[in-house]
Length: 362
Ligand code: KG4
Ligand code: ZN
Image 1: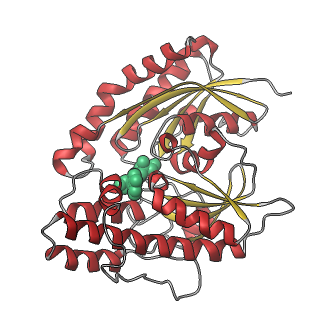
Image 2: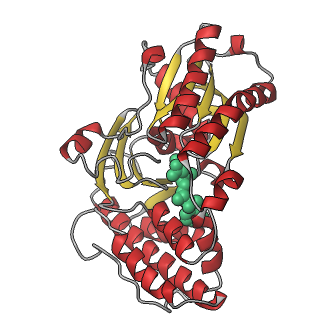
Image 3: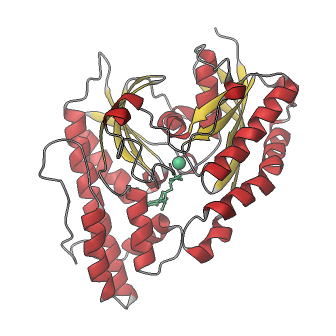
């Protein structure tokens, strides 16, 4: 039996200001509070996240959000064993707000501070609520990333393949913009796709026939742009959304099948984890479920609330690092990192795409 750890987690890397208090004991996580304040309304008029607006909103909301999470947990700072905050990758203004807030609380309360990689938060997110032991194959699909990772253990991540241009969430957001569906794009495209015909347009499935696990979505987006130019009615828009989503599902399912085929599960069962904002898409989850079943693998996906950005996953990453003795002794002097790939070795070998094309968002 290990000593229980109580961790405050803070997330501010994009457009959600979030704080959570988590208790971690013998590999099990219990959430004592989980507060997420979205900035959707502030960014919606611009159809995308505006970094300066995000940074200002985080500065206004960070203290209030942390106070709300602490109140809801019924604990005081003295009861904590550590404070964890996202230190990157992300929009630098927002990351700095969360990082400085976390460091200040840790220093004032005399607790260790654990800087967390936001991508690692997503990678560990299914472990918040489900039995999901290492190793597992991870498909990380968010607004800034689309990659397969071999998750061998805590801190041991190997990139197996990734997009060579747009991230999947980015493609969803661009399609929504082309069709004037509003922001955020992913849920809007998914909702519209429900009433559309997925066979109405034969959109390309880039890199599908090429070996390997790399993906590409820029050509698909261009094809959608051409179709969108002639789409006026809601029926036409729904057909485009359904056909676009079907193309994405086909690419992700085929590449996932290939990744699972060669995945080394050790002595245990094969597990496929899908995480990140796009993992909340039900059509994509269903396509991945089919791909996993074909390889006798189990699909594990976090609940919708923990697919998109949240602080519970940051608190969990902090707790797991602290429990494993990987807590950064110099956490207080750690800096904010706008780019921070999970698999640093692969990223060094491939500096352009290793951190995701945008590199700034997760
Ligand atoms: O992980 P996340 O919350 O944040 C960052 O990327 O930092 O992911 C957000 C992305 C956005 O691109 C959003 O459009 C996409 O996830 N997304 C979805 C859905 N919900 C969110 N994409 C497709 N279908 C959805 N239901
Ligand atoms: Zn994210």
